[in-house]
Image 1 (cartoon, rainbow over the protein chains, first blue to last red):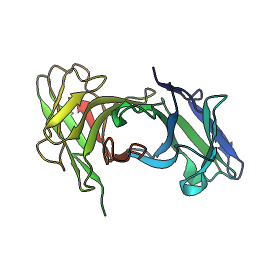
Image 2: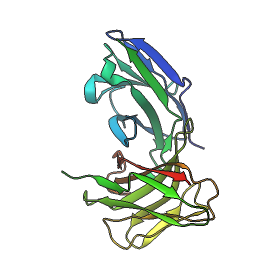
Image 3: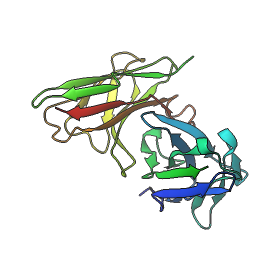
Length: 115
Length: 116
């Protein structure tokens, strides 16, 4: 069965510092991995995805994520945090062989950037 | 600009009442989805449709119903059988299975449903 875990409910970072939001997954076969961001009372916005190829994926707003197959992780990173990065972040996974309906979302991590 | 429009933004339901949430997309996507979001639980799939006039139950379909009569529209009805309907409901779409399987989903801005 597919699953995804975001072990931290909340991450607090000072503006200008690097940030990491953690995600681990479990899936049979090759994973498709996604990160989304959600601002208050809004829908999810796509940030980046890993399908195949380079393990370091770059996305919107300066975010990047590193796929680590041996650790089954896909952590979201940014070198220098902005206050405007404060939001709820979701990791999602789907097995490459499964249908688009079988995407599984993590429970979310609230990122708070203090000035 | 193309996107997904959900309405209303806020909705209140009385006991024993059915309510319908609207979802319209102009992205020409075949697949559409309804999710329920509760605090600390991520997104849970209610129903999905991969093509017009066809839809399947997701993980938490009890107490909900849908229709897909047009490609652009995928309304969700929350029936009186759903005893705990208070949540944030999100509609999503993507191009469809078998065409671009690695494409992310596009989301609307949600409808917040509360009980009166």
